[in-house]
Length: 244
Image (cartoon, rainbow, N blue to C red; front, side):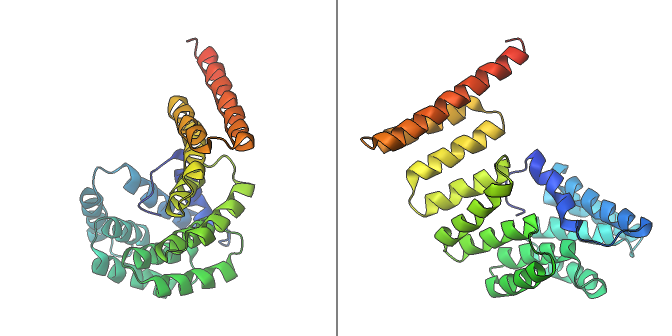
């Protein structure tokens, strides 16, 4: 998931990585620090700069788990996979069922093409945290890596039932439909993604592409045309609100 485009929903969903954690002042503070480390990485210029900052924090306090976690994420993003593994080891030894640390390890294993390890860990976490959104997203990522786009699409369809307005899920859906050769579905998913991030012109254009592909399939072309009109109306309403 580290390679995905960053949207507000993705930043907000870092909170879901700790949603099953026990409550308590110290625990809450630790969770906040982990979330903060992940969000900080999003806004840092490069993984190298982020790693430098987290390393400086660790030099001041080697017991600062949030800094070690942030450093591991920066190292995954920067391709320093062995270093990332070494930094995650003590965190996982201390808290083997922590969903935040385990998701980072799964990210690392996917990036390192250790797909069997990633799948085994993901399945264990799903047993502990059923219905967790980041775990479902990781499951889809794994299936894509395993060249199973049709299965990945099923996982994403399930996610869309509860998160129809999540641009990240639509972005992933466009990818898996493209891998499956479903070009019309690809353009329709892209249209939903662009609508949700406010790029209405791109959304309308994607549906133009989809309509051309639909050709003589009148029922499908009509569905696409209807959705295009809805997006045009949405664009008009937004422009009216902004006084344009």
